[in-house]
Image 1 (cartoon, rainbow, N blue to C red):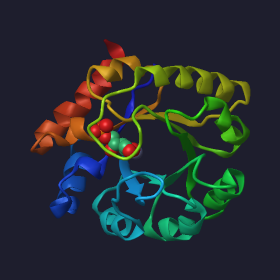
Image 2: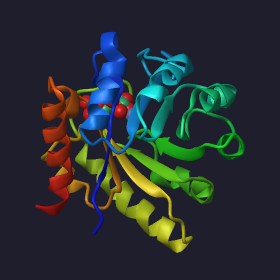
Image 3: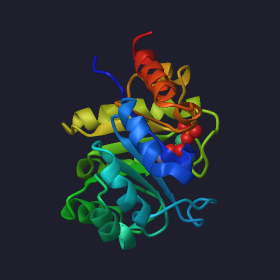
Length: 221
Ligand code: DX5
Ligand code: ZN
């Protein structure tokens, strides 16, 4: 059984010293850096955009995992490609044409991902699974860090895994929202765990390292 990859979400980092935070979680063993992009329309919160991704990219060697919680993501693909995003994930609810958008992400040299809100049926992803490298399952309502893990979303992971196997897809499954050392034990069918507040509640590289290790260990207990 392979280990979880851990993607700290910089949403909970100290934005006044973002470069230092990125370097610290990288040194602490982060496998990916998760970047939450919010537009105040698709979700009721504003965060950051491609210029910030461009600034932090040189501060880490690990993949930039960009989660777009924005309407009409098709309008921003080129910006994120130029900024250095490696994975670019869109919400199935956010665009009229997910297929075209996912193909455009691939055409720009990034790995496309798809995700859905907790209230959206998992079947809405089926037409797009053959186009993605990543499927993200939200275990909180998107918009804010620090919320509680929605256990009822885990059946989606089981169903997605089954579908991916059926179509011989190697796409990775990522879980995002409310992940901590306890809830991580419930995520064994996933490949990647996003964690914001659980990692960044720490103050130092050693704290971040301990949090990342606790998440990885949760797969084996
Ligand atoms: C929520 C974001 C998450 C969030 C996770 O909209 O997609 O990535 O930062 O934060 P925690 O781990 O605190 O739930
Ligand atoms: Zn996210």
